[in-house]
Image (cartoon, rainbow, N blue to C red; front, top):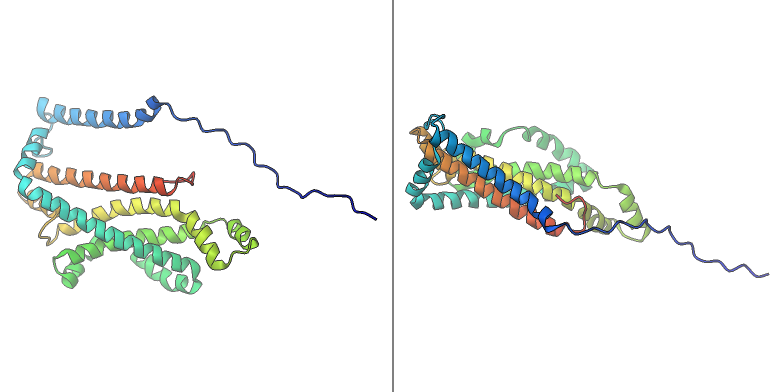
Length: 277
């Protein structure tokens, strides 16, 4: 008796995805053009209400020419203050983010670590890092160490929670599919879990960078020898609002540039993911 010849069962083919049509150049430029237009409008309104009509008291909000003059007068120290702040932010953000991701990954794999560290993290997380400035000055003095510690603490809290949540949101079906193909638990974690949480981690890095800027600048208000926070605090004591606005604008520029760099690296690292930040 001969068995009828059978053909191997093939999984159903995935429905054809509609081909992505390249965006028209005009559409690609529409977003940046709108951003430039909004910035230009904001600058025009600033000039209109502070210079052309004097509708705003210059002490409360200085005119563009006064801000430019103040920046020119500060040119000898502005660069050093800007680089000091940016350096502290980058170092503290890098250290805090790396530690946050590492601890978050360990907690997501170990129930013992999760239950041991979660109460500590949940107790410390709501505390604003700037509330610790008096203790940090006592512990580290007025040098860079204290400011880097506070910035690292802020970014650590963002990334450790972000990592735990991201790892917990990975679809367990992915892990089961990998195990059915012979992958071990370590290989599943490296090739499935870590790859799946990359987009969420990169989003957390962007949030952490902005928070780190805020914390480091706030720390520079107290006992700093350099930095944009020190510049703003010294200017505010004499009601030098043009210099205050100069420092604020430089902070905004640095924060936006750092965010754009992270965004660019994120896009390149997550080209395979439709959910890239």
